[in-house]
Amino acid sequence: MIDFTSLVTRHAWLALALLAPAGQISGMGLMTAYEAALRHDPVYLAAVAENQAGQQFKVIGRAGLLPKLDYRYANSKNKATLTRPDGAGLPNTSNPEYTSLSSSFSLRQTLFDLDTFARYRQGLAQTNASDAQFASQGQELILRLVTAYTDVKYGQDQLALLVAQRNALAEQMRANQMKLEHGEGSKTDVLETEAKLDVAQAELIETQDQVSTARYTLAAMIGQDALHLDGLIDGFTARPLIIAVFADWQEIANNNNTDIAAGQFAVDLAEAEMKKSLAGYTPRVELNVTYTRSSSETLVTLEQDSNLRSIGVEVVVPLFSGGRVTAVARQAAANRDKAKLDLEATISKVMIELRNQFNAARSNITKVAALQKSVNSATLLLQATRQSVQGGVRVNLDVLNAQQRLVAAQRDLAQARYNYLVGLLKLRMVAGILGVDVLHQVAGYFSAGQ
Image (cartoon, rainbow, N blue to C red; front, side):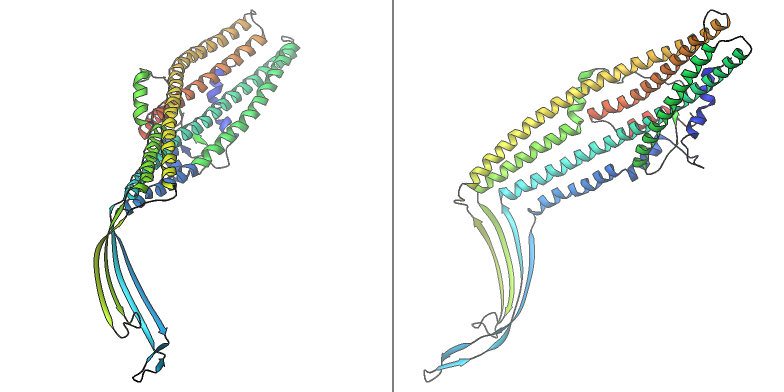
């Protein structure tokens, strides 16, 4: 008697060996894969670099509020032609040559400038937006990693099922052939089994290609090819959502979603731009402090040294700029209105996606439980069908169909389990609370050696 269920475990190693490079035995858990992705994933590393650049916006904006100190030095050789009357009133021409030296320190401090203040607020908003974008990239890394990880595991699970199914069909065909040779079977049983075996072999080849693609995707993220990944724990249970009320998820998303936060910072940036445009109507006030030391600067001061210290306030009052200030202000106001409307659209989009993921997460819980029952039923059906064949009630085709239904049920259950885990991450990512702590919880569903 062929025990199909035990073959799944017995031949799982063969399914992995079909794709294993020679000598590769190392395994990798989900958290280890995440740590590797932090070091190697090019998309995330690009986000790190972008965020580092984004941190400079607030520094650049703050620079306008701080003093500006300059030092200048000049050294020039001069040759002049000087004509002036002598004692008799006659013109006397000379060609003096001299060196002019000049050095100065100057300090300028903004006292009042709406443009400078607005640029500072813009810098803060741009840095905050960069931080929100980076937080989003960090959450996306977790989701992409778990998706790639589970894609590989799901493919390997299917490969193990198909290998076991193929081997079971091969044994079934050999048994049917032996019966035919002894006059106890029929040619139809052999042909039916052979046809199922050919289909199983074709599915096995297709799944091998899918697993290879999934492995390459994961390897591109973690910087290495990890063949042996931790599998799902025995007794996998899809737990109910800790936060079961959708209104609570809405509140969390409003406060934490990175797209909403980025949209709010875009509004802040537009507000600062509008205030900056209004600076064209207001005066600018600066404090200027200068110390200058010079020698022989001109013919008048030839062979004279001077030290000049000055302190004063400079006021610039804009009067007319050809209508540019008004146009810029109107443009900034329109852009601010657009930013506010974009924020409203983003909030609506996030809430729709949140509802979809919330419903999907709850559905996945129910689906896992239902498919587990389906697998149990398909297993009992296969056992009963085999016993019926021995009693002459069922035929060979009934056994083959029962085996195929069991494989389909096991495949659907595996897919539902992985979808349940990925769905939890998607829900939390939309809510803006997907972090390493959540990844640890998901990693708890996997165990080495499974």
